[in-house]
Length: 226
Image (cartoon, rainbow, N blue to C red):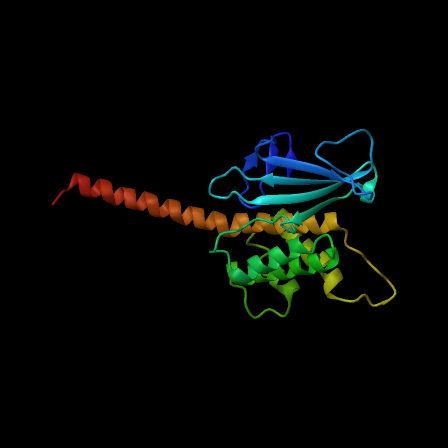
């Protein structure tokens, strides 16, 4: 989210330059010290507020960051609770809700996040590809094997397999297989990619076809006015 280009607003996706107009940081420590500037090599917690300059957004993002070993030097999103893409309304509400919830719990419960990614995938397959009547997700994924590229199909099946870790107990109840937050994040990136390739690309194509068809009708009318 923070790069050489600046800070990417999690609400609208616009990059902003980091300056006094968009960013405010204060530093705190356990003894109650509050400083507008970082001094020396102190162990402290930095709170940074980013204000989006986009007039149609103007949302504020709050991030806490440990410095010099403080709270294990973790960076925590305080508001919003997580970064996720805000997809258009033509993506089914249930799919968007599962995706957003999976993003919200990725750090706290990556195994549950992976399970929600699996559920999100199942909803997408049933809705977009109109797959009905299959016994479970394994067979639903198999039903689209010849409809998507081989590499995409393998990655889709991987979501199912990793999501199963959270959805089903191992035969040996003492065997614990964890899913790391970074791994859950990879699954969510794939969900985002599939939404982009399936729903958004289809919508963009349909809009382009409509515009070109309407343009042809306008030109036809201009050539043969009544």
